[in-house]
Image 1: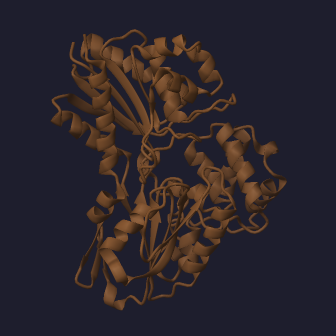
Image 2 (image 1 turned 120 degrees about the vertical axis):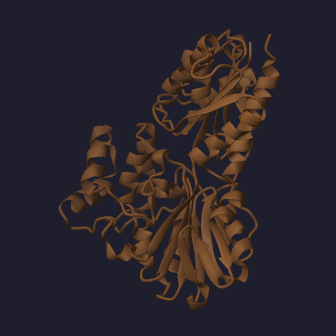
Length: 445
């Protein structure tokens, strides 16, 4: 009989190794260094002796740790700056101010911080360098609406989009057209300063325009796309009237579009990807190989409804156990990405918890199998859990608690079921964010 506790510990350790590989303390020094008076960022070479000021702004759950890592590299060359993050993600910094705000629904603190960020970049001159630290969660944390909209308009729109389970790329297409900073507009405010963005990706396929809604990246979407997405999701008529009015004015050409690739204001902007879900997935694979497991990365851009992704992971476990495919046990199959949840009930949970719980039904009674789904930021939905880890006995433990998995999923109450089964993964804030990790571990028979 397989040592299920050992297998669970192995899966958690693999997840921790993956998260460690995308911590800013690892990612930033890998991408940024100083050689005498030259700043080396990816392929960029910047003569710091010709720079008047280095200003740092940022947004997202990983931005404070990114700021601390950047301070360790640039030290007193940094003139100042501000990053905004979610509650519980702040770290100690010396020259860059850290402010916390609400996530995923924006609040007044986020609005005030966004206004401060706008003032900092607007003040930058042609001989200044603006370094922008971009990570997941930044879109909700930098909620500066365009003229004519309020924070409440943004919050209501965001809630409608989340409840409709609109994919993150489409959510951001709408957000960008309601924001004074997203869709390249932060870069426009910084013009004519030199801008370097260091980006930690939390979206499938690492699309720069989608990460935190692309504050320094060109935006391929339009007001027409925003209207189409809202109508297709069935929320157009429910949107605040002011949001519909802004969108319609954009459609009629009365408002400036978000920045497109040929915009001259982007000529002095460089976007540098410093970490992603693929990097995390490869780190989990490397850890498994070191532990004597066979391992493979299945995908790094998983999308889809969480309650449907879980059964797919369960099917993969059956295939490995029964047929040794795609690799024979002992095996760890790894994927990364971002699923969605259609909110129907009033229960507590998150997308990783729904993946894990729906997988539990598919591996019910199976020996030597563990499925683990965790958010790399340490916070899955509006809960204190990072995700869940299940095995062949999980469904039975849920039943023993008087719960039925199908009913729990229908009520979006995965947290309570996993809590009852002892299957929650709680890490606390990790201070990084590259979306979600999905692990299928199979012991040798």
